[in-house]
Each structure stands twice: as structure tokens, then as C-alpha cells.
Length: 65
Image (cartoon, rainbow, N blue to C red; front, side):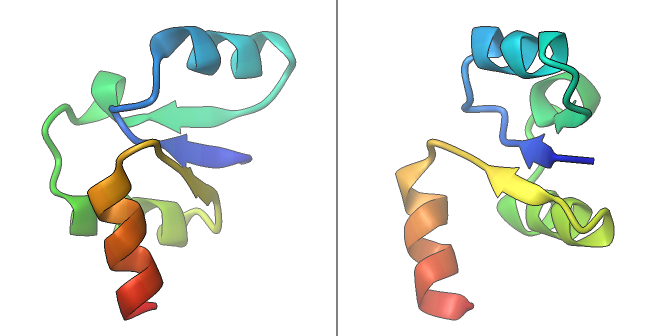
């Protein structure tokens, strides 16, 4: 799996990655409104990249990890 995409990522990006053959989970499809810890946990569980455009999450990850 390439990555877990946070629900803030625009759907066209998700569709393009899939069209290009990448396996990605999209939080907006699977678990809308999931808290950030749950999203990060899911990405870690699958050893996948966490792809987001959510600045507060990026800041928290840089601070805590």
C-alpha cells in the first residue's frame, strides 16, 4: 500500500493515484471524521505514508514524532 490519505486531501488526487495503479486508503470514504490519532494509527498499521494537507496535523507530527 502506498498511503493513507487524510480526508482533507482533494478527491481528484485520490482518483489520480488510483488510476496510476497505487493502492491508497481515503479516510473520507472509510471513516469520515476520524480523529488524527486514529488516522495516523491506520497508516502505521499498514506501514503506509500518511498524506495530508492539514497543517495542524503536519505541525503535530513534526512536534511529537
